[in-house]
Image (tube, rainbow, N blue to C red; front, top):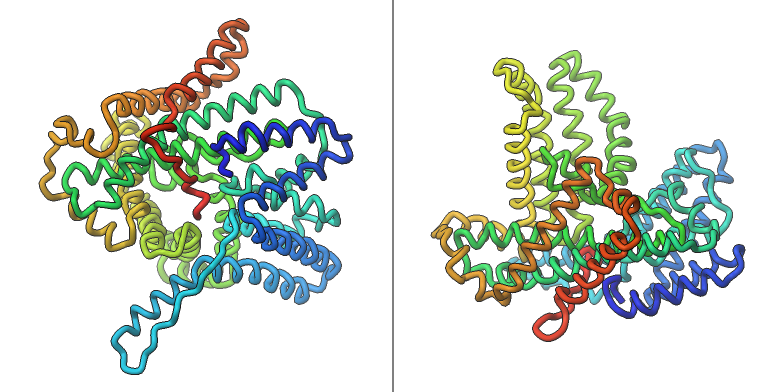
Length: 509
């Protein structure tokens, strides 16, 4: 029951909202918790046991660390066992077959070697997301930034809140836990804002992303049949599909939570206006970036190993080399974690290393960049250089997504090489694109939809709040915009004859 499906949008969400509203204030948190568990059960059946055991284990571990008081060794033991256990379960469920396959390939042909059989794994939805939230909560308690919550229901609701179950965003406990259990009555404005945000997300998901999935599936699944300009088409199409879908689903998620008075963290901030790889990752999947920065980057930066390197390198090599070494020590685990978090495949690991190299190059070339602007006198923020940096970042993004979506690292390398053969740019207009499952009308809808989203993002980038602007307009204008969004989804949505329902991409990570 994906967030873009009718059972969720016209049955589960409205019914949960009604029951929540008619319940007394002190019972509303229980309504949300029960609704969340029902949603999880409908999606994963008996695998809800993973969520229930995780919730109970995290709650008890937090209380145990609180009771440990100043006994540092005991608290460390508790956090290592509890957080390590959570990651251990995640690693086993998602990566055991990847590990088995790697060992089998490495040992193939060795005398006496018998291939290890694969495990049949049942993986509950959202485990990658609620595991990070759970570990974040435990570390906050361990560091003393947060007092362990004695209310099991609040911990369980934080980890299992149904709009966040499949794709996040990954929230910190202090950001959402109290909102979830406040029990405030639903207001008309919350519902209107929530429905509007959901419709905007549906527009991006089923009008644009689901259409793009047709050509993306064709190009990546049959990549050996394509070369030249079709490879950039594949990379750009997937990057746009991923953005339209993931940000669209986040709109649905944030809109759903907003109806209950819960403000979830934003996960995107106009990423295609980024001027560097590092800026892109500050704007894309923001909640994952914040989690990695808070619970991986900063702890490594302040670790004994990094401190020893800093003291040694400053004496021997100076500030520049010290900064490069420190950056490498801190960024390596972040980007290996980022790559592995997305899935058990070498192309995901390569994806993490790809951005590690790019961010290290930014650190290494920073003095040269400053010297360039200083000596040439070029305006750093002039239109030409801003445009150049944005286009350069697009090239970085599209190349990365080519490998990210490829059906394995070898397929990614093969596609990358194919992009330099028989380029044939005329295939963009000679009818080739109309032989991949999309007709001319589909392409018109896709391009028009992308243009609408681009304008909306451009206005946000210029600090223009479209919702605030519409709020100042007359009632007929506001309702006209609202109904235009509804009819755009109903008329141009990619569903019905000729289309298949496209599963949520990030629900698989």
